[in-house]
View (spheres, rainbow, N blue to C red):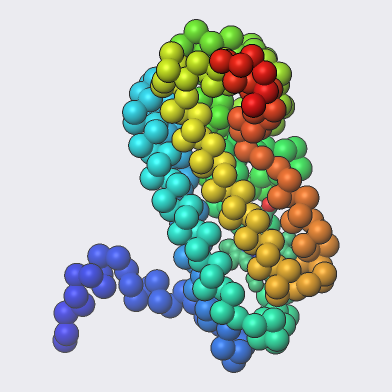
Length: 270
Ligand code: HEM
């Protein structure tokens, strides 16, 4: 009997390669399945780094939080690059096996939903569904403050005037954009040398949000390339629905405060 090499047994490679089982003979389906699995696993890598950042922020460990956020950004870059591989499939190949998906859609990915919840996008339509029928890990996530909540809590402990309702909101509710939080970021960016730590944190958070939006925007392009104006298997109207999702920004005040940012030397908007 030949011994199974440690590489194969340690990482359970045989089981792993059993998982991609195309339902058609169309060439593109195997790549589609492989990339879908790779992406799901990368979602978990990002969740694990964002979770570490959140824990570090709870301990007011800014260095630890920023290192974890920087690691997440690297994996987010890989996630976006994965779309390149998917684009190797032509629209005629995709349409030739699309029927085997039935109503399967990424919108049903509970790992992706967990990732959005960790980041802080917790709209009622998703939280209600997750609390009613989601797996334990998604429900557990909704009992925790989000990464953005943890960042705001850290800023409040550093003496910034984060509005109380933002700090006391039940974790399963959506963070609503707040002028008070915008004011906090404005204060930080108004004097970055004085607020070095919070400024660094803001730049790290913004990079994570930027990379997330880049992934969404590229997904939309792939969807247009494969489907044109067709509806999605998940029951939405496809690209039009995703275009609306693309409007959403994580950590909203980190994007909006910039409109009010002025050059302190000039006392006017640059
Ligand atoms: C040919 C490739 C793909 C097409 C045409 C496509 C199409 C779509 C469409 C139309 C939607 C909207 C929901 C629906 O009605 O289905 C959607 C959502 C989604 N897709 Fe894809 N998709 C593709 C590949 C992927 C891959 C590889 C992943 C990663 C595992 C993925 C992840 C998602 C996620 C997470 C959503 C939900 C987004 C949200 O809730 O904001 N998609 N996709």
